Length: 333
Image (cartoon, rainbow, N blue to C red; front, side):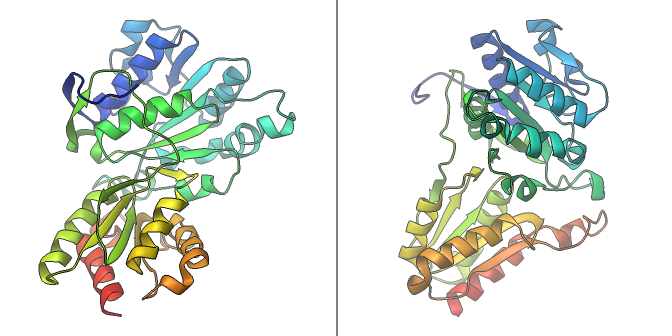
């Protein structure tokens, strides 16, 4: 349903995620929420109050075993449940990797469409937080985009988080939903109270422009907004187009390609390392579709190909200045 013109409530991102799960549990009696510490609210409080509201047979803690959580979720989804599983930090999703890319992603294919785990959603706090170091700051989305059968989604704001999470839970494919943890409390919006979904696989053009296309997702969108403000201030007449991918896989090729054909320039930014990152896939696809339209080499602004450094975090993540420099390079080429 459309959430336009409906009642709203001020929420931050973790409250919007909580609200989405509450609606999912209310509207789907097969839905269950589980993971490490979720019954008392989880480390980021995203599941606060759900166990009390829906009972501990529907919202419950698991042992500290990510492979077990994912395997249990695959099993529940395979027999018809709506399994909403939390991996406490995206950095610890790797023990579950085999269950996700070899079981969940291939379940429908392997059975010749007789069985599926379409009711499976994996939620996980992701990306930099300012003090996470190398084990609580990583952005592992690119690993999962390489596994056909999985959808990968990340929101930039509370309104987006609620609508995209409800769409992910109800999508008939397994979805990995990465929540930028730095935004849990930082991002606040008037979020529709109603039950609504935002489309998966569809990017959003946040700002229209004519000179350069700028693509990002998650918390990186705010850095890009600041870089665009700086670029348009320092280069009078410059007009930048900003696109939030929202769904990283399958990503919205059509919207990005259409934009680049208009602007002739592309800057892509993400926190994950540069090599074989999502930006590389976007750059290659745009090159295939827009070769004769390009006025400058595609610019990628990414994390470095190193472990995520604690004391050097501000040099690691793509900053406003690094993004601004990429815009300037593309425009002045």
